[in-house]
Image (cartoon, rainbow, N blue to C red):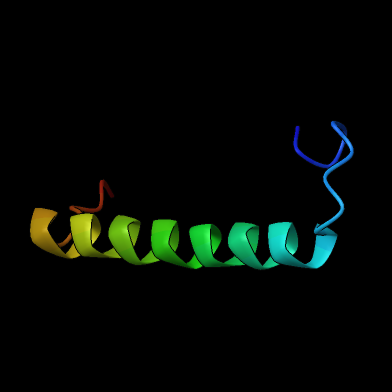
Length: 42
């Protein structure tokens, strides 16, 4: 929304989005590791 609102700092917004994406992936991986291995239905 910031880009659409005319925020002139497009590079900063892209960097913030990349940081958020990496942090989200780290948190998701941490949650998966804490849940333990999945059981496979065969």
